[in-house]
Length: 366
Image (cartoon, rainbow, N blue to C red; front, side, top):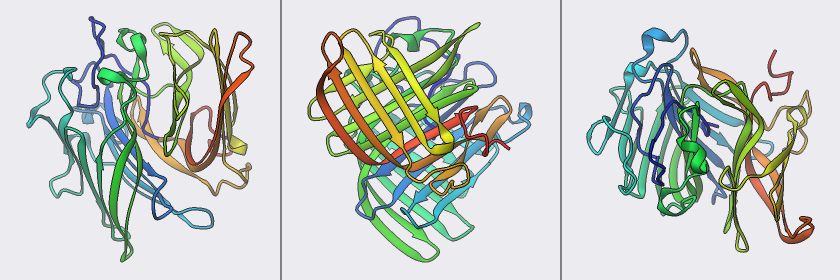
């Protein structure tokens, strides 16, 4: 969920690098947050870890200045477990390489940071190079999670992320950086006295900036060598808003495709949150990618596969989106002058899809 686009942060020199480390606050409001989801697990569970905060802005926010959540989807016919808290931003301690964050990430250096909530270690992230450990404990229901991540699969070489050159524009209000399309993960959970251990494949990313936009879409799925990640919607760029702007990355045993402003493309989305469907066609000069996320059985009155999640707004973290980890994902890739030569076709399960802001089903906005 906590996955994607915004910031007043700007680089004057266009370079590529790893943006997973903490950033220096730029303006107000301003937030940053991290998101990981473990899918294709040995247990069949899908596990997400979400956190973010508005540093130093407790006195300016009418609502929560920070957010933590762990989501466990145990599959069809089973309940979705959502554990979350809204601590104050002043309860968050963030260090980079053991010191107070005083500069933005430098690009050659591997990530090295600690993000900690409260004084009792109820929630923390420790990142040392390619290795990450997350601990989350919630008193209600006796829930404890410890997860380890390693061997990340980067979006691109040299710390390249989804945004391309547009990520360096000073008018961009939100940033989305995908640290890994497929890290190796192991975990141990305790839920109401039951202990569950397993392994899986993990998507990991970061957001930072002003707030999430008025509406947005986000999705990801991974299985074996096949990974897909995307985010988009109407993107505010200074005084204008660009409609139907998307960032997409697709990896398989056949293709390694990116769609971003470095290679201009047109996007044709179909958004039907009430029926759990999102479809987008990305089309450039000689490439065409058709992606469909579908949460089967979803209707206006049957929202079993969806859950609410908090996101950053101008007044703090509020429930402003819905997600599902039960999407079937169909991917069709074409090449050729007319985009009519099928070169790859994949179907994935346990895909994640988020309808944010005004893209939610109107039943969920009431």
